[in-house]
Length: 195
View 1 (tube, rainbow, N blue to C red):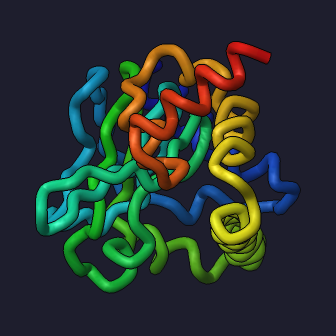
View 2 (spheres, rainbow, N blue to C red):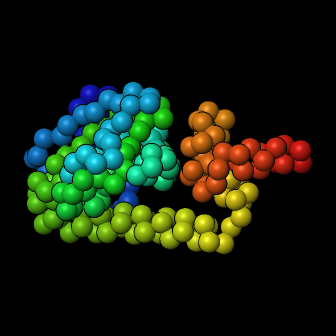
View 3 (spheres, helix red, strand yellow):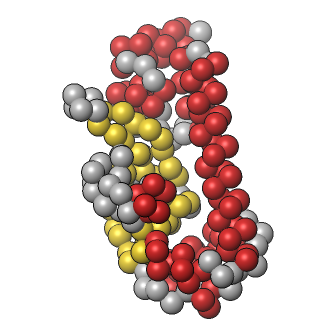
């Protein structure tokens, strides 16, 4: 994709939420990031105060404990906004990294400059509020699943949400995403295969 196609893809994503946004307000330059499978857009502890948009590809949010244990927080499929709201808004260091699970095309804007130009546009603000609502709803549903659903159910939900991943990424990544050990995940998979 060339830069104009990337800008159009970014704008289309917002426009499909049904709000009339005046994109003429946006003059801050866009950066383009080509991230190869296995590489990181940014790592835990970096500064990442940009609005990132995943045009193509698939990534995972990964955090590492003080003991060095790795946890997969979530997966994100294109097209969608990715990144750390906390780091973007407060200019703090990120609490997780974003790793490409397949070659990915990402564009970004410096958040503060982007927001200053777009915050006068009511359509953009309504669209951004809708996007934040989606994030909060997804987090609520994920927290609810950890409290109410069995590990087997969480694995089946993962398979339904990410059918293209269940046989191609390491079991450890899936296990950490659903909150169990790789050994427990292996048992669940064996049990399901016997059915």
